[in-house]
Length: 86
Ligand SMILES: [Zn+2]
Image 1 (cartoon, rainbow, N blue to C red):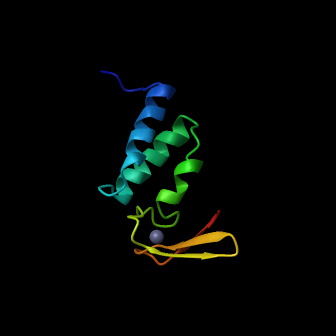
Image 2: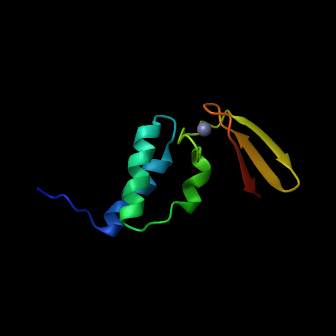
């Protein structure tokens, strides 16, 4: 039984996971976050794909506003506003 996975395996797994967020659940995102923490892999580039507060995946149909060089996304699940510099 193989329990520990290598860093490159983990990276591949994370990349694959974030390819399509439409079928993901907050529980799965939590798991991936744990994996990335264990392997010390930054999720920075993927952080805009889910809500930081409730880990709800963004489906692409959230309310999006662009103002002063920032894109704001309102989480459909908890209402948390996420700001992304563009
Ligand atoms: Zn949320």
